[in-house]
Each structure stands twice: as structure tokens, then as C-alpha cells.
Length: 223
Ligand code: IYR
Image (cartoon, rainbow, N blue to C red):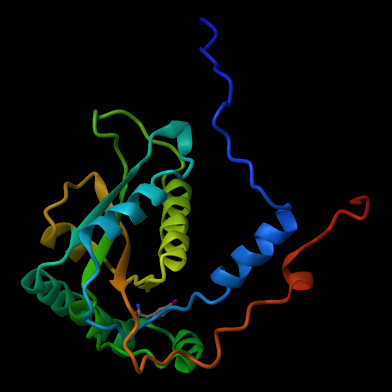
């Protein structure tokens, strides 16, 4: 096979301050991200959502197949139908499917089957994973790729001062039906986007991140 065309990495980003300084500032923004379940109905311009999706779609993906679709819902009637279907799934989760350990882990979050935020948040962004490319071709590392894009979406929202929730009503198949997506697309994440309610509360627990020592293993040779 012919060698691929490679070009200089010309417009690469070079910060104008030392990396540790840039990272300290970025960390101070990211560490204040919380999963928000009490949203304001304050509108968010469509161009802002578009900007978030543009940021998300800069993520790397297997063979650059970009196996994601972002379905953006703002219509109150469609949000209502999504809420109804999600709450029906959640009721079976809380009443039957979750085992005791799972319910105990969720208790500090104070969650239950009621999901009013699905109607209150101005936008619901439903991220789908594509198991076939739009041209019918193969895709690779789909979950990894979509997960990376979703993470960048959340980070972008945080930088823009917006609140998000990574909501995964399970099973999520109803989203494919309600949103008219084909069988080759699988709902991955439902992300309400908006501003927190003025009196928004978040769990007191769950804000602490594990200390670095617990999550990092330094090679003893590392300098
Ligand atoms: N999907 C349910 C339960 C739930 C599960 C996990 I894991 C969470 O981190 C939070 C909630 C719900 O949304 O209530």
C-alpha cells in the first residue's frame, strides 16, 4: 500500500503560560463540576449547544470513524414523552432490578424514579453510539470513542458555565424509538443541559474525589 500523505502539525496549540499553571486553572474549573438534578428553565441558545457538540466531536475515535450521533431535544412535548418513558424504566429499576448493594450506593445521592429535570432542563442531548458508519462501513472501539466524546462534551459545558447530568435510564431502548433512530444506533447517554436552579442542591457526599495517591501508580523509576 502507498504511504499515507502526512502533513506538518502546523496549527498545534501552544499555551502562553507554563503547563502547571494552565492545569491548575483548568482543574479549578473542572473540580467544580457536579451532577445536577435540579435545573432552571432558563433558556440556553441553540448556538451554545452547537458549540458543545463541536467540542465533543474533536474527540479521537477508532480509525477516526467518529461513531456518534447527538440528538438534541428542546420540544416540551418530546421532553415530556422522554420523561414518562424514562420514569417507567426507573420505577422498575428502583422497585425490582436494583439489588440491595446498588440501592445502598445510591442512597447518599437521594435519587429516585422521579425525573422532573427531563422536562425542566431546556435541552436534552441524547448521545447515540453508532455500530455502523453512515456509509455502512465498520466502526471500531465504539464505547471508548463515544465515551471520550461525551467526556469532552461535559468538560466543554463546565467551561461554558452550564450544568449537565449524565443520565442513563436503563434500558434506554425507548430513546431509539422516541427519537426515530435506526437499529444501528444505540443510546449511550442522556445529558440534560442547562443552568442549575437558583436553589439547586447537590449531594454532600460524592463531591470528594479520590486522592491522587489512590488513583496514580508511579513507576518507581519515574523522575
Ligand atoms: N438510573 C437511575 C439510577 C442511578 C444509577 C447510578 I450507577 C447513578 O450514579 C445514579 C442513578 C437514576 O437515574 O435514578
